[in-house]
Length: 210
Image (cartoon, rainbow, N blue to C red; front, side):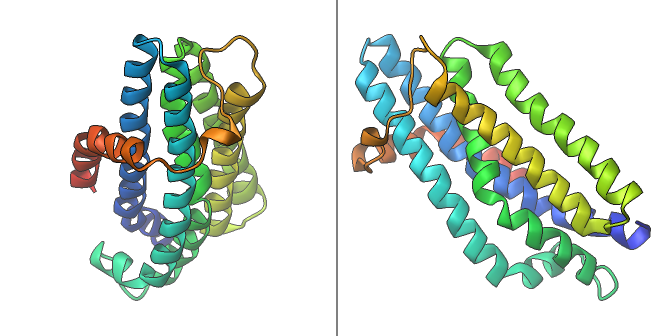
């Protein structure tokens, strides 16, 4: 889509990296705590960690959506967007931010699949999103000419595919060590505090990259 389109995705990269950092804060922290509880044979507590992590990821995605859209132009300006690039970057990030909850759940909950002893399944859930995103980028951008908006739309549809694959594992797959139950989604302050403390180091490293 030209130099301005490429520049738009470049200046959007720090914000997208920070979004990954937020997902890691919950995903890495929750995964570590769930692994500890599974090792202690406390399956119910581990499933409460899973449920609370899911709620945190969805909630963080909604907050990122609201805050990101409200402060989008200053964020992009700080990343180097000039008057020519800003409209393209804004169009790209507006769609990307709308998909925050999907990205957070897909990336954050994926960690728990490895803890459940299915690393290959965890890889597949990410590959599904990658393949869908790549194929739709080709269709939307190169064939239909939808520009940066098409690329962003392809990206969040890929994230939605990964999100669906991750949730399918925890809701519908039989004989797994962890299941996602509605009754364990009620916020538990001690669990949430431990999740955030265990995930903070990974968050700080990723946020520093942003």
